[in-house]
Length: 539
Image (cartoon, rainbow, N blue to C red; front, side):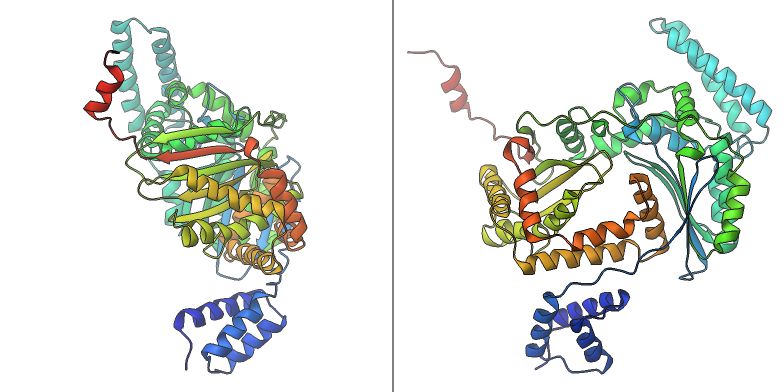
């Protein structure tokens, strides 16, 4: 009798991963024989193969080797040549995000990311001198407008003057010139994003158009002009409304993060607080640009069909003459040890109920993070402990998973449970703690340990299977401290023991150190009789 398609598909996927990793262990040799010789998969021999493969580790991917150079001005350059396709994934990362902000200017890094698409002294404008003169007049009007608060007539006059100047400036602009230059060159995946730690400008280009990227990005690094600042500030306010206020879980996550981090600037939302965004000034954005958009705070990555020596020569030609910026101190604020359990309860009827447990873990690098990666694998997935207990056995949840958030300065571990209807939240929380407590009491099985190791190995492969993912990963690891950790971290996870996993669970899964967030349905309205019973006169 033939085997089911789902099981055979699972084996074939395992075989593909093994071939990608150049696996030479016994089960992969057996799988290679089976699929290469069109052997018939019966139910019995298939499940025997699955059992056989499950106890073996997926070997680590081949070591990723890149060319690493630091230019004289401090700019870090990572080059990874590959003939996978005749394209090059280009990334320029600035080590600046919401972690470098403070109350009063939150959201400035994200707003500046928007502004960098407005052009430079050479791009996006017809007459640079006239444009610069208009910018000075616009700023003078906005300064006067800030000082005129309380004087409605003066404010209205200045607002009309501002609108007139912006309209005049737009006549001399070439909208989206930078964006369209990439598109006309065959660019794909053109984007930019801001996170808590970095701001990135990315695109994938044909191999013969990489010099365009170097020219445009070196110009943006040196000569950016923040045109239409105040209209773009309004755009960001609208973006915040759509991403945070209008989403059922938007404010929940923002508030939960603020509860979790008491002191560390990770508590600041990357998009910024509403009152801060409304009051951001062009001068603040200029200062942020002047301070952080410098070569000694930048990581340039090219991954794809490149000649390393020629690419490096072009990079030196375009970026080498840009002066390095001032050195600035690293983030020094540390999160204090929790004084006790913290809770956030949100009552909403427009989103499914959920439970989240957050735990503080060390910033990268720290050896405990490797064991916590194994814990993520043990807890997550349909064969993970959380799903088996809360979904399959107790029928309390629709899904349950965990995540090990490895980050610079401070990290976090999250347990997330999605629910339905009107759950008994105390029962759900007790079940989660039962799973976590069990992990702290006794070591996991060898089978669970190996499954989690295999997941880490497979995840590492998937993250770098194309040049875009590889470029992102190289930059992220370099931003954390050393790009070579792209190889070291997965290797270290493979060496974690079951006892180290148990010790990590015992050390970090503490009730007095947990931050608990819940979304539950609104309380049912009280009946008239119930209200009368509460407010009626005493006999």
